[in-house]
Image 1 (cartoon, one colour):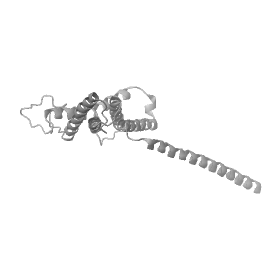
Image 2 (image 1 turned 90 degrees about the horizontal axis):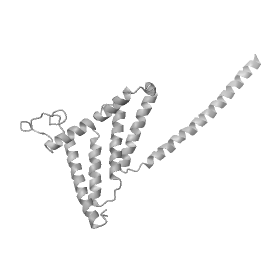
Image 3 (image 1 turned 135 degrees about the vertical axis):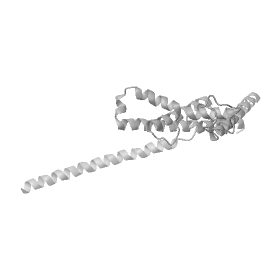
Length: 217
């Protein structure tokens, strides 16, 4: 904290941090106070003078929230939170590298999650037009793999997992638990091996019983 470096870096980080932090708060507030009755994507001919804007940020917030929710969806809140967090880090002089890459990681993760939810018709979140476009694009491509319902759900599950990981990476959340998860899953391989041995011995006993019955006959 408060590691700005030189005076020049202090000025740049301080100003840029305030701008990002302020915009993030405006973005988050506009999303929170979004109203379908305000001007936006669906109301391009909205009469500003004759209408009452419910968004707390006013005309700008109404359009910002409308286009974000229409194109990106409900997970726009994660994008707003990311901007607030990174702006706060710069403002406080906390070391934060690769901001643009982390931003792209956050946005890509949101889109992948939206695509996964849209493909499986999970509608508890607004997934946005971007995910709808990508789903329609891949649907129109004749992929024989997608005809298999099992492979279809596996692909969507992988998209969901990758999307979550990218968002975790953008927030620099420790994802060492993923390695623990894979280590835990390896345990099932040993169980499978034990069950195969158990099945083999069971088969041998079954064959011996059949042989004994044949001898008695």
